[in-house]
Figure 1 (spheres, helix red, strand yellow):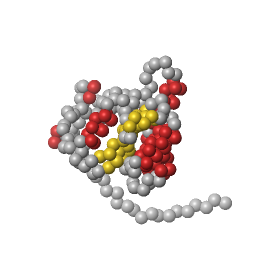
Figure 2: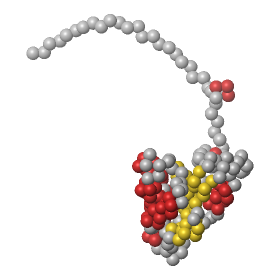
Figure 3: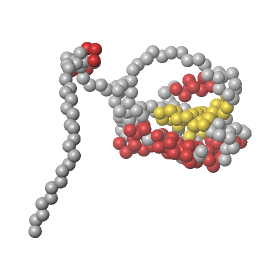
Length: 219
């Protein structure tokens, strides 16, 4: 069986409003087409600025353990530290084929040998010295250059300077049970592109791993 049902709904007053589309004028922010196609797209980039002389920073007395680079950056920083009004104890560490103590404040170590890092700290402990600042400049060295090295050898060399050595330093400091806080500053070149020089070298960005993890392992 089929049933039909009728129901009345209340009437609604549907008001109609007219909107006039007025053309945009200069006062309302008119959009104009730029005929120069080169200005249609934007790319974030670095802007070169002239170098300005910064005021000399006065540092409190401290003991610095500086892992020296070969570009001359470390030599200039060490000279600056030695000219500080507050006496700074500076110990330099350079990469070499083996462990060698040039003098009581200068060492050569092999980056791949973890025990060499321990020996440096042990020698300093014998002099009653505890580093409270570690300045790591080995990451300034250029990696991935041309030569007789194979690609795998280049990768191993980059990892030794950007990953393993930072881990060895942190573990050696932990084994020595240094009582005071230690600040580590890591300086790396070419890890990111700037001033239109490309995207940087991926191997030089490996240091970001230990830089972020070490403070959590040794708070």
